[in-house]
Every structure is written in structure tokens, then in C-alpha cells.
Image (tube, rainbow, N blue to C red):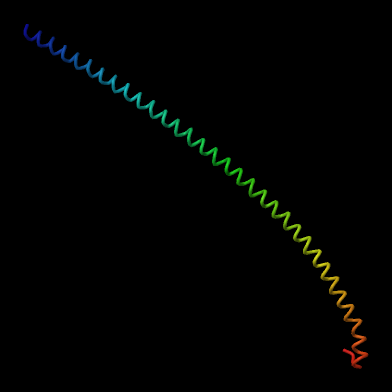
Amino acid sequence: MCSDNETLLEKEVDQDHVLSDSTWAEGVSKHVTALSETVQASLHQVTQGLNERAEVLADAGRRLKQEIETSLSEMREEQKAMMKDVVEERKLLRADVEKLEAEKESMKGVHTFQTGRVK
């Protein structure tokens, strides 16, 4: 009978051990679940922050591109105006050169008359 009691006692101890193992496993599972939820929330916040920063950078990039395009457009317009001025200045210089050449030709006769030599 003693051995029956010992067997019964062993079964109760084993049963208590199983219950404590399952309780411990349940606690660990709850803890892991809580940690997982915390990590997911943190990842969501980080992702959201990165997306906001990416949008700010994209906006800044678009503004910079627009500023560059505007500056280039203004520079092209200035260049066109300068080229028109250069063309006008060339026309005036050509007219001056033609006038000077005409004066030179008209002076040849005078110079020849004065020196008696033809150059």
C-alpha cells in the first residue's frame, strides 16, 4: 500500500510540475506577445517618421528643381538680350568700318594729289 501512496504522490508532484510549466509557458507567451506588439508599434512610428522626412525631402527637391529651371530660363533670356545687343553693336561697327573705308578711299585721291604718288 505504501507503494501505491508513493505512486499517487509522484503523480501529484508530476501534475504540479506540469501545471507550473504550462503556467510559466503561458506567462512567457504573454510577455513575448507584449514585446512583439511594442516592437511593431516602434517600427510603425519609425516608418511613419521616415516617410514624413522623405516627403519633406521630396518637396525640397521639387522646389530646388523649380528654382533651377527658373534661373536657367532667366539666364537664357538675358543671353538672348545680350546676343541682340552684340548683333546691333556689330552692325554699328560694320557701318563705322564702311564709313572709314569710304573716307580712306576719298582721302587716297587727296593724298595722291598732294604727294604725287599713288599708294
